[in-house]
Image (cartoon, rainbow, N blue to C red; front, side):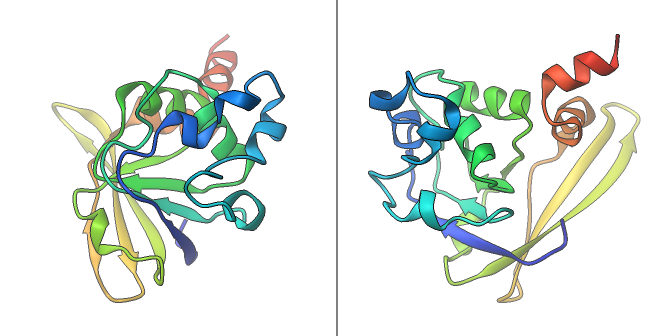
Length: 170
């Protein structure tokens, strides 16, 4: 993950209808993905490159519980979403599908003109067990710490989603 990644900057309160517009919900995820963020960033779906990172304001993923809102970002190859906060439903859907979300209180310091590197450290804590800590390093020299992620959620990221984790436990 330590490769420089392009940043797509989004505002606060990006909702699930911005990510997976309701008019396309009967289509396969690959088709819905062609319309991702068209109301906020019309060029996003056709220009995003595998590994690019979304940096957004607070409340990313608010709205309905549609799983496709996270699925389209995976379909487009988004490497991670960084924001100060996420909707609870979106948060769980994203990890269930294997999309990395990084909660960073200082995400507003990351501009679209930046590239970022994501650095990870794994530690074992007596109270919490294994936890994964992430830092965002910008090309402007900032290093921003993200909230730790428990091991069971990182297993979902590493295995490509909850279904793959469950298959391994059979």
